Length: 232
Figure (cartoon, rainbow, N blue to C red):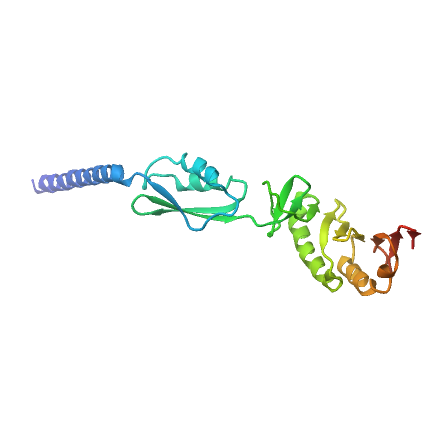
């Protein structure tokens, strides 16, 4: 008898608990889908430099659901597909707002005449009218080229020259062109040392030869000059 009463009480508690859980779920589901929580606006933490309002509107119009049910991950991924967006984050801002933060690419150079490379050495596709140096090489070398670009420019500062083109061949041979059109063949080894030797010797050698077009630095103790009057 007592055992039956215990079972009845246990069953009653189970039924009541399940009913309460169902009512709670039903209530929450009702509140979550109230019209008051429909998304009304998207807030940008900062004005974008390259991403247009039309591009953002296209992404926002594809967002489905309300404040609680909108798929933030999918929205973030859609934003990161826009040409100039490097990284995006999307957050809910109670009660009917989505807050969007965009990190845009900062273009460092053109890449293989079709793309761009950013200051992190990452290749991306976008259009720009900005005048940029030209990089060329295999995609997996983009970071290496971007880093070398900065280091080589620092070495060239005493000459008040900077690089307008830099190329790394599949065999890892370096070739650069300066803002005055002078081309430098640096080869594969001791690249920094060769460029430093060129900078030290420039005033007493290359600068004294008229019409220099190309300097071959792939020598152990010197370099060859290709000038309008012939090689030296």
